Amino acid sequence: MYSYETVTEALNDLKMRGFTADFNIQSNAIECRELNLQLHPADFEIVEFYRFEGDSNPGDEEVVYAIESKEGLKGVLVDAFGIYSDELSSEILDKLRIGR
Image 1 (cartoon, helix red, strand yellow):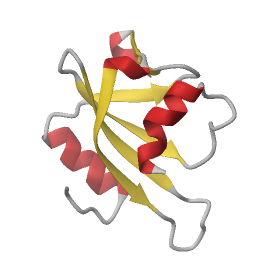
Image 2 (tube, helix red, strand yellow):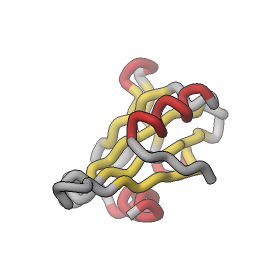
Image 3 (cartoon, helix red, strand yellow):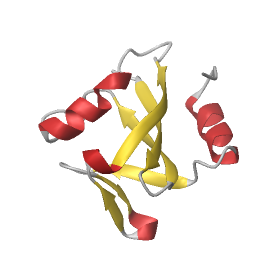
Image 4 (cartoon, rainbow, N blue to C red):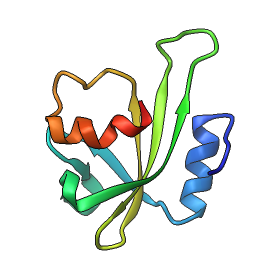
């Protein structure tokens, strides 16, 4: 596992290592808008994750997930702790719980 000081450092290195898709959270899937693609929990694995906690504000906490689909698509998902928790399906919450 790698070690990063900032979210930006993690994102830049992951991109250089082939994690180029940009994923966003939906209620029951993750989505890559650029590719018009949705991946449900059974369609992807979290291969790495990195937690970042804000030095001055505990609310500035984020997790960077390195994700790979079953078809080999690699990308990243950045999630702020707790923002989406009420809107997500239990399957997505279970999948993302690894980084929380």
